[in-house]
Length: 337
Image 1 (cartoon, helix red, strand yellow):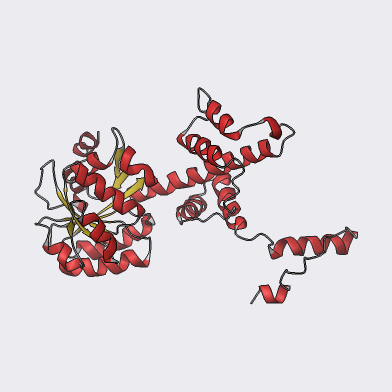
Image 2: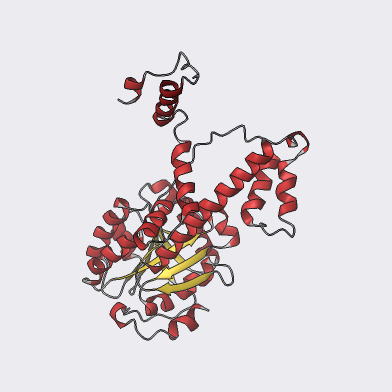
């Protein structure tokens, strides 16, 4: 249990928190009402917390206000609607948007307030930002959040980092957002996002393995008799690889067995890259994560220049046959502009 873990930590005085709040129902500001932020705010309201909501575009703020949130149409208005010591949770895209909002918040928040960054932030950015806030007496808590669009119903897995006493004081929020056993205090500043980064690297590898396995089935001589939705279903009953991802695979194959309505263009949101970078920095071999990341990059280019180079070289040194480019394909120099 988080509180037991926290009370056993005695060496974190350098990351103190000056809050004095212990109610089970809290007041919290939510900044960023995207797919995750909106549903997290809703879950908090269902759990009895008072939510003051702000989004850059006011339409989403209005939507949440109709469901019981207090609407704020500026960061200053959000701060005015929260009593000290404030808790402000941000759910924003990693990078500059977080910096921009923190630059404003550090000027209008008060000593003893807490900012919780629940986005997919690089843990080194947490380390950089902490002193900028702490010089104003503001504490930074970093929380890795997993659960996707299903979190409203099923809860979110939370990994928290930062001042231990701050995390203890806002534990009622963690309890509401997470399912039973679904949150953990991981250590000092950046620890929560670090654990989430590794989680996402593992996620990359798991999804790539499932994708490759189903492709082998689809290309096999038994493809005509195999229902991939049924394969996913039976694997999820007693097998070693049973998982929520297989449940999702069963659902999507039931709707469209050939996945004909989408292109295999795979985005990455950063954490996989950071996990691979961390592995390199610490000398840890992580070939599955690395190859899964490279496969995502490759998916975005259906006719990469590197393949044409290799094909041309094989023709030049061995006289191997090549397939001519289609008439609608761009010339190499045009593609590189």
